[in-house]
Image 1 (cartoon, one colour):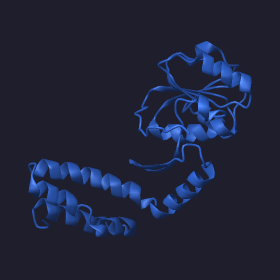
Image 2 (cartoon, helix red, strand yellow; image 1 turned 180 degrees about the vertical axis):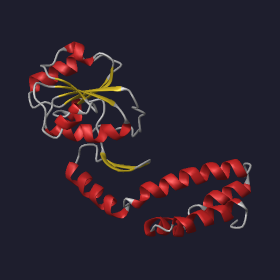
Image 3 (tube, one colour; image 1 turned 45 degrees about the horizontal axis):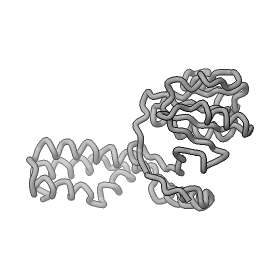
Image 4 (cartoon, helix red, strand yellow; image 1 turned 90 degrees about the vertical axis):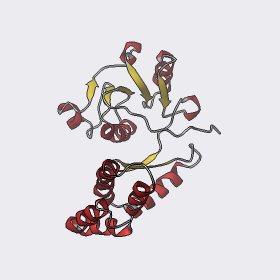
Length: 212
C-alpha cells in the first residue's frame, strides 16, 4: 500500500482539469470550489448538478472529447471517466510536472483526495489511503457531528483575535498566555449561542491584560 504525504495545497486561481462530467466529477468539483480553483471540465456530457455551475461561470465546461492539449496549464489533473481507455490517454498525456489522479486506478495516481469536513478556514481530512473508503466516510460523518457549523465563525474569531493579541503583546510569556486564554471553552459556547457580545468582552479584557 502506498504511504501518502498529507498536504494542503493553495489552489486559488490555479487550473485543475477534470476529464469526465459524471457523478465522480461532481464530487471532485464540490471539494475544489471552496479552494477557489479554476476548474475545467472536459466531457461531451455534464451531470445535471454541474450544469448550473457552468452556466454561472463557476466552472468551465469544454463540451468535447478529450485531447492532450486540454491539459495545458493544469497543475492538477483528475481522470474521472468510466472508460478505461480515456483515463489511460489522460495519464499518458500528463506532463511530469503535473499531478495526476485516476479515479479508477489509485495505484496509477500521484495523489488521492481525502474525505473532507470544511468549516470555513477550519478543515479536517480523513484518509485510509484507499484501504477502506467506507471507513473514511463513516469517520467523516462523525466529525461533521462533532465539529458543527459554529466552528466556522469560531475559527474566524480566533484568527482575528490572534492577530490582535500579536499586535498588542510582544513575543514572550504574556503573548503565549493570551493565546492560550483564547482557547477558553466558553468562547465556543458563546459562539454557538450567538452571544457575540460576551465573546467580544472577553477578548477586550484579554487585550487589557485582565485574563492572564
